[in-house]
Length: 194
Image (cartoon, rainbow, N blue to C red; front, side, top):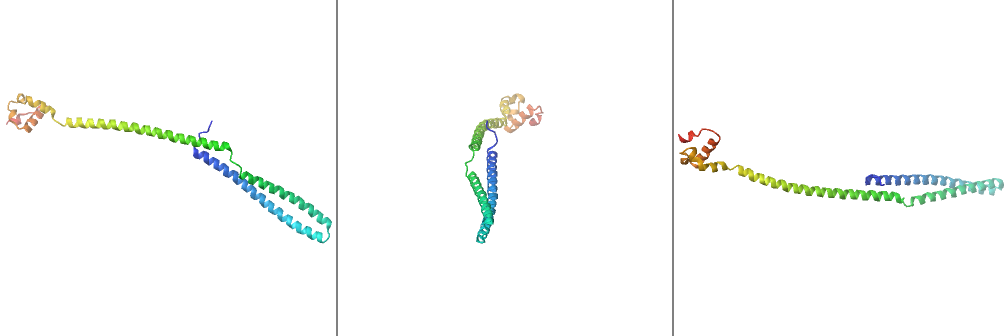
């Protein structure tokens, strides 16, 4: 089963592994190249000494240097082969399993993003629906509030105003409203008839 690390973690781990491996290889190549350079210098120096010994007819010393040079050349050839092997490792394709982990992490990240996008779209639709419902409720409440601002009870009671007080019909429209409001509240209405 795929580990649920996030995509950037998987990619960073992969890159760190690759860079670490490449660094080890390049460090090893550099050390081998230094060793090869030292061997080449020793071979060159011994070759010069060999020529000098041969010129001076020192065959036993020349044979020792020839044998030593031969061993150094074998070592140099082995080091050169090893350097080529390390260079080949630098060009080696990356492990398919590592790429599969990255691909799976990418697929998971994409699916997570698409799932989140779908969830946000659904939430947005639900909120839009809720907003419309609330706007409709607000509109109804506003209408009811405006309707509640009208003195409908006063309008209904106007038909019985003459029973509240026989002279109430003589009052102005505004005075009738005030009289009926006072009467509903239980206050005295006598001040309207003085």
